[in-house]
Amino acid sequence: MKNSLYKISDLFDNLALETSNIEEKVIIYNDISSRLYHFLGFPHPVLNVQLMPLNNIKANDYNPNVVARPEYKLLKHSIISDGLTLPIVVGKNVNNESIIIDGFHRTKIIKETAEIKSSLHYYIPTVSLDKKYEDRIASTVRHNAARGIHQVELTSELIRKLKDFNWEDEIIAKEIGMDMDEILRLKQITGLAEIFSINEFSNAWE
Image (cartoon, rainbow, N blue to C red; front, side):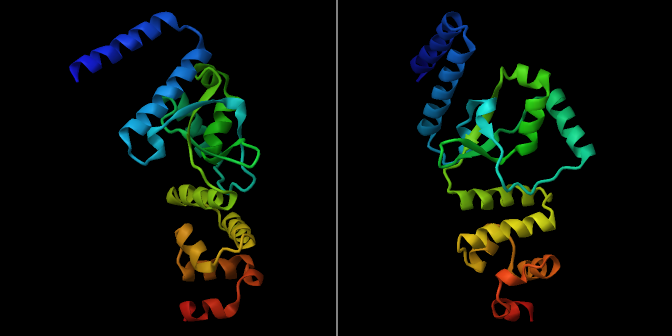
């Protein structure tokens, strides 16, 4: 084991001497991160951070996460002061583009702030989820709701989208962390009645 660790240390020393190009360093970093992830065998995406070119990361078309101006300014100050501490969560669409699942505002701040994006050499740390479009929507809901920042109207729009994929009401409730009563209340507040039958909710409500 000690010999292996010495070899790894020597390898990095040699790489540091031989590699000065940022693009090459990124390729090496991503490869090592991926190999260590598979070597470790823990099934958590955060253990396989990959650096992607900033301009290759696209916003999704359903994000309900709205940040007030003071919180947005604080988030920007946090990234400037502490550095980026969380990777952006992305998934591939049918065109093989990297679409944001979680981290829209962090990405926006990085793209619009010269000192941040230059410090990252126009790359951004990401972790990837291999999910279909409708499953990416549910993942975004879970990430946002866990932080308590979903808006009711926009959450209802996500439910509409999931219904378009023929998701059963019970599956929607489970996947976005709501119970049937909560979905009924959301329906009543936001006019979702047309996509839910009254009978499906009458027992839960009573």
